[in-house]
Amino acid sequence: MNTRNAIVELLRAGYSDKAIERQLHVSRRRARELRAELGLPNHKPGMQAAASPEDLFWRRTIPTIDGHLLWPGYDPAQAPSVRHGGRRHSAHRIAFGLAHTRQPVGKVRGGCEVAGCVHPRHVEDQQMRDSYRAIFGRAA
View 1: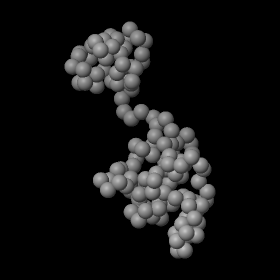
View 2 (view 1 turned 180 degrees about the vertical axis):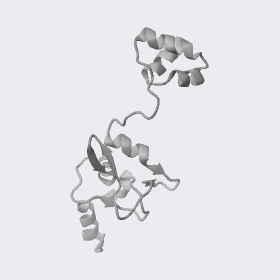
View 3 (view 1 turned 60 degrees about the vertical axis):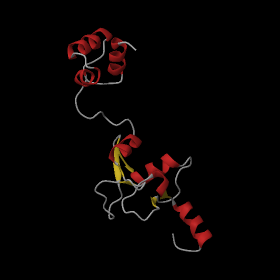
View 4 (view 1 turned 45 degrees about the vertical axis):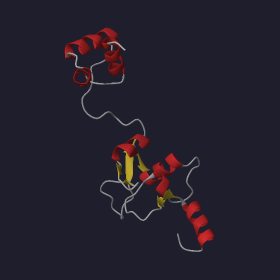
Protein backbone atom coordinates (compact mmCIF):
# COMPACT_ATOMS: atom_id res chain seq x y z
CA MET A 1 0.00 0.00 0.00
CA ASN A 2 1.40 3.39 -0.90
CA THR A 3 1.50 6.35 1.49
CA ARG A 4 -1.42 8.18 -0.13
CA ASN A 5 -3.72 5.14 0.23
CA ALA A 6 -2.63 4.64 3.83
CA ILE A 7 -3.41 8.28 4.67
CA VAL A 8 -6.79 8.07 2.92
CA GLU A 9 -7.65 4.89 4.83
CA LEU A 10 -6.84 6.52 8.18
CA LEU A 11 -8.72 9.71 7.26
CA ARG A 12 -11.83 7.68 6.40
CA ALA A 13 -11.44 5.79 9.70
CA GLY A 14 -11.71 9.11 11.56
CA TYR A 15 -8.08 9.65 12.58
CA SER A 16 -6.83 13.18 13.24
CA ASP A 17 -4.08 14.76 11.13
CA LYS A 18 -1.76 14.59 14.13
CA ALA A 19 -2.47 10.87 14.69
CA ILE A 20 -1.77 10.18 11.00
CA GLU A 21 1.48 12.14 11.26
CA ARG A 22 2.58 10.01 14.23
CA GLN A 23 1.51 6.68 12.77
CA LEU A 24 2.71 7.08 9.18
CA HIS A 25 5.57 9.56 9.69
CA VAL A 26 4.14 12.05 7.20
CA SER A 27 3.51 15.76 7.63
CA ARG A 28 0.23 17.04 9.01
CA ARG A 29 0.06 19.30 6.00
CA ARG A 30 -0.07 16.25 3.68
CA ALA A 31 -2.92 14.73 5.70
CA ARG A 32 -4.74 18.08 5.78
CA GLU A 33 -4.38 18.48 1.99
CA LEU A 34 -5.77 14.99 1.33
CA ARG A 35 -8.62 15.63 3.79
CA ALA A 36 -9.56 18.75 1.80
CA GLU A 37 -9.15 16.93 -1.54
CA LEU A 38 -11.52 14.18 -0.37
CA GLY A 39 -13.99 16.68 1.04
CA LEU A 40 -13.77 15.20 4.54
CA PRO A 41 -14.54 17.45 7.53
CA ASN A 42 -11.85 18.39 10.03
CA HIS A 43 -11.34 15.94 12.86
CA LYS A 44 -13.19 16.89 16.05
CA PRO A 45 -11.03 16.43 19.16
CA GLY A 46 -12.18 14.48 22.19
CA MET A 47 -14.18 11.31 22.70
CA GLN A 48 -16.43 10.25 19.87
CA ALA A 49 -20.07 9.80 20.79
CA ALA A 50 -21.01 6.22 21.58
CA ALA A 51 -22.89 4.50 18.77
CA SER A 52 -24.94 2.29 21.11
CA PRO A 53 -25.43 1.29 24.74
CA GLU A 54 -23.21 -1.72 24.02
CA ASP A 55 -20.43 0.60 22.88
CA LEU A 56 -20.69 2.53 26.16
CA PHE A 57 -20.69 -0.76 28.09
CA TRP A 58 -17.37 -1.84 26.51
CA ARG A 59 -15.83 1.60 27.05
CA ARG A 60 -16.65 1.59 30.77
CA THR A 61 -15.80 -1.94 31.82
CA ILE A 62 -12.39 -2.97 33.12
CA PRO A 63 -11.11 -6.47 32.29
CA THR A 64 -9.21 -8.38 34.98
CA ILE A 65 -6.49 -10.98 34.51
CA ASP A 66 -8.71 -13.68 36.03
CA GLY A 67 -11.46 -13.38 33.37
CA HIS A 68 -13.89 -10.95 34.99
CA LEU A 69 -15.16 -7.64 33.67
CA LEU A 70 -15.56 -5.05 36.41
CA TRP A 71 -17.81 -2.02 36.49
CA PRO A 72 -15.86 1.02 37.75
CA GLY A 73 -17.18 2.58 40.95
CA TYR A 74 -19.49 -0.37 41.57
CA ASP A 75 -21.96 0.26 44.41
CA PRO A 76 -24.09 -2.73 45.53
CA ALA A 77 -26.91 -0.35 46.47
CA GLN A 78 -27.18 0.97 42.91
CA ALA A 79 -27.39 -1.11 39.72
CA PRO A 80 -24.67 -0.26 37.19
CA SER A 81 -26.06 1.50 34.14
CA VAL A 82 -25.25 3.72 31.18
CA ARG A 83 -27.20 6.60 29.68
CA HIS A 84 -27.64 6.56 25.92
CA GLY A 85 -30.26 8.17 23.71
CA GLY A 86 -31.98 9.82 26.67
CA ARG A 87 -32.57 6.46 28.39
CA ARG A 88 -30.82 4.61 31.18
CA HIS A 89 -29.75 1.05 30.28
CA SER A 90 -28.81 -1.60 32.87
CA ALA A 91 -25.24 -2.85 32.43
CA HIS A 92 -26.38 -6.34 33.46
CA ARG A 93 -29.12 -6.39 30.79
CA ILE A 94 -26.68 -5.14 28.15
CA ALA A 95 -24.20 -7.88 29.16
CA PHE A 96 -26.93 -10.52 29.01
CA GLY A 97 -27.90 -9.39 25.51
CA LEU A 98 -24.29 -9.68 24.37
CA ALA A 99 -24.01 -13.31 25.49
CA HIS A 100 -27.48 -14.69 24.76
CA THR A 101 -29.81 -14.73 21.76
CA ARG A 102 -32.94 -14.28 23.85
CA GLN A 103 -34.29 -11.40 25.90
CA PRO A 104 -33.72 -11.71 29.66
CA VAL A 105 -36.61 -12.82 31.87
CA GLY A 106 -36.95 -10.90 35.12
CA LYS A 107 -34.07 -9.19 36.84
CA VAL A 108 -30.54 -9.78 35.52
CA ARG A 109 -27.85 -10.12 38.19
CA GLY A 110 -24.22 -11.05 38.43
CA GLY A 111 -23.84 -14.82 38.56
CA CYS A 112 -20.29 -15.05 39.82
CA GLU A 113 -19.03 -14.22 43.28
CA VAL A 114 -16.96 -11.19 42.23
CA ALA A 115 -18.59 -7.92 43.28
CA GLY A 116 -19.09 -5.58 40.34
CA CYS A 117 -18.52 -8.21 37.65
CA VAL A 118 -20.65 -7.59 34.56
CA HIS A 119 -18.97 -10.06 32.21
CA PRO A 120 -21.56 -11.23 29.63
CA ARG A 121 -20.91 -14.91 30.49
CA HIS A 122 -21.18 -14.18 34.24
CA VAL A 123 -24.68 -12.67 34.38
CA GLU A 124 -27.93 -14.58 34.74
CA ASP A 125 -31.64 -13.82 34.58
CA GLN A 126 -34.50 -15.20 36.68
CA GLN A 127 -35.08 -18.11 34.30
CA MET A 128 -31.47 -19.27 34.69
CA ARG A 129 -31.58 -18.92 38.49
CA ASP A 130 -34.79 -20.97 38.61
CA SER A 131 -33.15 -23.68 36.47
CA TYR A 132 -30.10 -23.82 38.78
CA ARG A 133 -32.39 -24.03 41.80
CA ALA A 134 -34.34 -26.94 40.23
CA ILE A 135 -31.16 -28.82 39.34
CA PHE A 136 -29.08 -28.20 42.43
CA GLY A 137 -31.87 -27.70 44.97
CA ARG A 138 -30.39 -24.56 46.46
CA ALA A 139 -31.10 -20.87 46.46
CA ALA A 140 -29.47 -19.17 43.50
